[in-house]
Length: 459
Image (tube, rainbow, N blue to C red; front, side, top):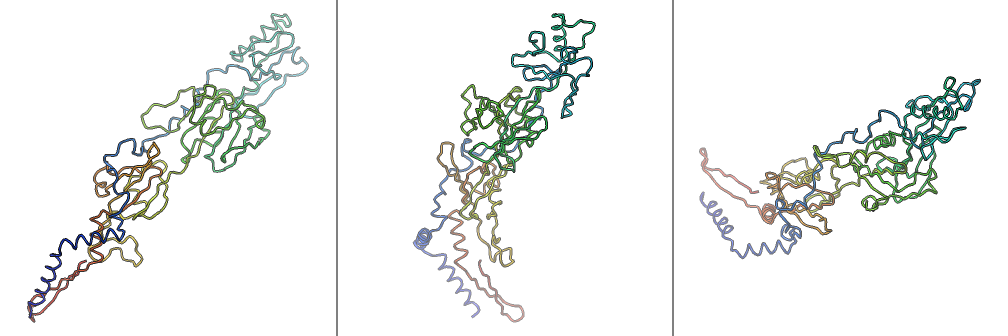
């Protein structure tokens, strides 16, 4: 009687292993018509990741560093050179002022400039100054000391003043300013008010102008030799932050520099303007604030110098997203701003199954492991990616190989759709482990009473 259970078990095993092939075919068709995703996966037939051409791979975001800030400013000159727009303080005793009254002293509102003496005389557009009793005196291209000598010589030549009793003083009262418009949408404050920065500290004026998106604009007046990209950024919120495109766009010829923004020649910079620089009168310069380590700067030193009427644009970066489906939790996820995200990291970030074996991914009972031998982990990751031509391609990533081969563990890029499914063999193995349960009974001899039993359940 002790041998009867063993014979029964062997008969059952023989019947199971001796199942005719027609039953296996029937089981496969059952899985197909039941809608098994591993069998009917519409994106499974993709290009293997290790043979995808380079133009379809995502570019790396790593290896970039901030450029030297000195590359965004112009070097200060050894001496200030006069030009149109400067205002000189000139005192000529007996002509501009009298001996009975002291010369006027002007104290500037900012500590960056020195006090000046005399009456304000502007340098005209032709580079000359107009003074009483003498012809216009050319001062453009001269230093302040050279301009003072030119004024003295002009009055000596007319014999209006004698050399022994002359009292002529020439100082720089107000340097010329370059007016530029700065439009930034990388700021937390989303308003499209264009404000004029008043040099004399009398407050700011605000003008509302139309635009297609919410942005913050500011008209800034930069002193001469400070009219560069670095100065205009520090005056309007600092360098572009992580949420920006890490790029400064300088546009020439889109604004005439007028204070009256409502009636001035102002052309709102569209997206086509930012990408098209074919018009010579409307030149567009792209200045990146981050470059790859070791690469030369893609702009010239003169490109950071701003001119009157320039428009400086700093754009915010649209969030880069990827989407998931299949055995991954369906959703929308954001890519890191300055770091690469590989296929394996994307599965882990979305809390998808990865080499989990018998681990339970949905733990509601407090148990971390499932009973039995566990389930095979899904390893077929399909990445649906848009091509530069506007079409799409399916890239097949084997997660088991991606652990060992970096060529298989490709980077995820903006707009990718990640679908995780089981391979057919993984789906069939999981089906058998969940549906079929095999009990094996055996009996052995106990040394004490010659009786005993054991039971093994799989899974």
